[in-house]
Length: 400
Ligand SMILES: NC(=O)C1=CN([C@@H]2O[C@H](COP(=O)(O)OP(=O)(O)OC[C@H]3O[C@@H](n4cnc5c(N)ncnc54)[C@H](OP(=O)(O)O)[C@@H]3O)[C@@H](O)[C@H]2O)C=CC1
Ligand SMILES: CC(=O)N[C@@H](CCC(=O)OP(=O)(O)O)C(=O)O
Image 1 (cartoon, rainbow, N blue to C red):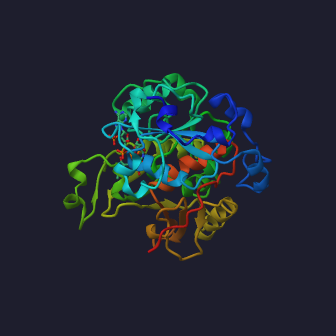
Image 2 (image 1 turned 45 degrees about the vertical axis):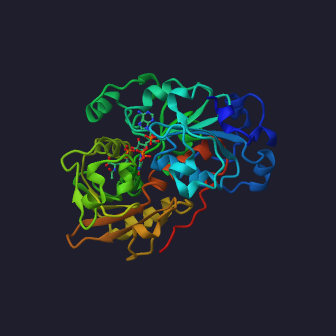
Image 3 (image 1 turned 90 degrees about the horizontal axis):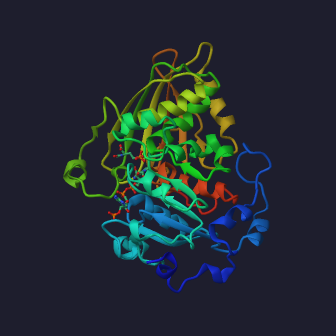
């Protein structure tokens, strides 16, 4: 079934989508930044709105029946320019989004089709690829070259394909594409992302860890040795597929560590931190599974560089993220909680003194499905399409 047929009676073309499909997206790109690395938008939103009619950009969501795919659907429900024209599923192919996710039943969208049947992308300008790692390289390789793609899987995150093979236990199947992939940690790689065609959206743990550490390492404020990361994730981080280890009885009323001696996010974290340090960084990383559906906390223990104080770390992060909408540094002594970012694209962080002299603790929290996945993916596609980076991401955290 073609995406046009699947889309049925709702047609963005009626609202003035320019001819030429994906190819035209570059021409339509609205350059909203004065400088590549500057922080979010000071542009005239009215001007952009006038140039870009509602729901102009046609979006494909590959893996819409999963947790990150459905989170994209939820976020796009309030996006003024991005409208979904194609959705895929595997086991759930042929079903409507409302039958698979009743909380999205109000969304009038095409039924989900199998990825193999999605051969007509003439009605698609950009794709969110929300599929399991290991499946994505060949699928993305087969997509039309004009499409903008944000891949939420790990398949294009590691620049060294040998590292990918080592940690993911299979050969990289799109080495050429890997060269053009841009790592999508928005606040750090913004200038590269806005010109990218293929963005590798970061993992949830690496997002919560690199956002506080990368600026501190780059400014030589902390030592690059002895970085210890204790991280905790909600169960939705493992996806919606039924697994015995994720049954209520296996998760509730307790926590446990996993990947203790080597989790596949280690090379991704070390890649980003090594780039910030301009030298090899090795971290001690232990993830834990928590009895909650969403949320992630990373508690990071670091050694201060000689002559540096905890106040210096706080001040530097404050300046670095001063103009960033989605990264919030709390006032001294205030403790970040996962429940204060739930459902939102925020990363909340703070720095604390350690009782051991010369050391500090950093706490960073995100919603793994939003800033850790679909929210950041949307932030990136907004950038790639040249529209305000925060478009469709105005959700305040859901509390209590
Ligand atoms: N969950 C999270 O917090 C985060 C996840 N990610 C990454 O995002 C990606 C998606 O994760 P998530 O949404 O949690 O996963 P889910 O397991 O919830 O969803 C996976 C989706 O992919 C489809 N699918 C599964 N296997 C195949 C296949 N062989 N071919 C085509 N489609 C397939 C599924 O279809 P169906 O349901 O019909 O079987 C479903 O739509 C993964 O790579 C994950 O690692 C990244 C950051 C955070
Ligand atoms: C709780 C849980 O299982 N979390 C996942 C990480 C989720 C994520 O970010 O996965 P990707 O790197 O594939 O995108 C894990 O530990 O493998």
